[in-house]
Amino acid sequence: MLRLRTVLLVTVLLGGMAGSPPAAGAAPGNAAADQPSTSTALLHVNFRGGFNGTGYQPAPGEVVTGTLTRDTGGETLADGVVGLGGGSAGLTFAPSAALTEGGAVTRSVAVEALAESAENGNNGFNTLLSIAGGAYYRFRSGLTGANEYGMNGPQPPYPTVTGAARAPSDTMFDHLSLIYSYVGPQESRLSTYVDGCQVGQTLVNGVPAEAAANAIGFGNEVHPGGTNRGFVGKLKALAVSSFTGSQPASILADPGAPHDPVAPANTIAVSACDSPQTVVQKAANVVPTADQQAWQSQELTGFIHFGPDTFTDRELGTGTEPVTTFAPTTVDTDQWARTFKQAGFKKVILVAKHHDGFLLFPTRYSTYSVKSTRPGRTVTATWWATS
Image (cartoon, rainbow, N blue to C red):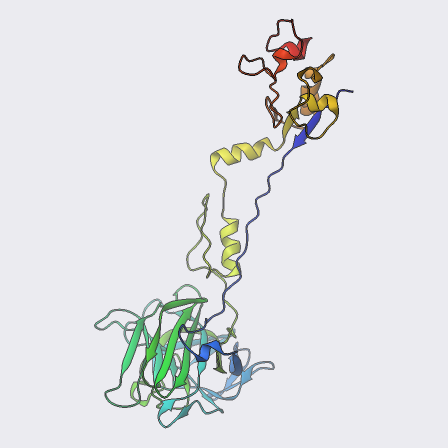
């Protein structure tokens, strides 16, 4: 029996999706960070509630363990977004739990915000996040001309450590986190994250951060000496959690959109810090090369394996079958072509040499070919198809 084996290969490209990393990872070298993390949500609002005078009235499901107030009364709230105009404007959260003791921040705390910067106005010391007046995330245009995060010690000469921060976008909301870890009287740590990725290095101070008030500032400083450093922009959600052990996972959801539009390309790198939404956008913009598009437009490709296995009815031969096993008597290659064409195939590949080593063309370099299938007879390259 003559058996024709046709193999259709379909290539499917699958793009993996990396999970969004937590807003904060464990601080390197921190013994406390090696312990299991326990956290308590002190604040979690998406501004579904409203202001009653200067105080914020949370909506059902929101968490305000303490009081959340607006600093001037002129801060706006519309469609779940708070507008801040700089100067003395801002929001202050005074938790019921004590974060400070003896002029120092003695409790580990994670502060988060979904913030969007105004295009203009944040050009010097505008504070976006403030922890008790001793740790901060702010803009700075003075001598360094860079945004920064840092913390001050509670005693003169006020030991200070700072790092370069990344400014929130002025076209979308960014997820910003300021993570303060109280290790003990001789050590505190501070790290900052933007859209799930750490910015700069974890800062280490030999003393706890200064505590000027048991309060958290959003869009302004809570230190009495800096309450005119208001942030110009918008706030969409806020969260504060105290924790022990390793740094907690984020309370706020990732805003999701990438900073810059994803340009179509043949290859787009995926970062470990890309959110799922960013990965989806990148995957949606991967386009084929001209050659790949031409290959894909062929849609169907047929493979013809025609050799000793056709006559032994085996899936895989060993290459030890006698060469005379290949003994076609009637072969209609035109019928093969018609069948492929009727089925919609645009390309057919005839395998001239496969795993068993049998050659579908005459050659002086091997005796395991069509040339040796009929000893004593002159064989041409088209013998197997015409005899």
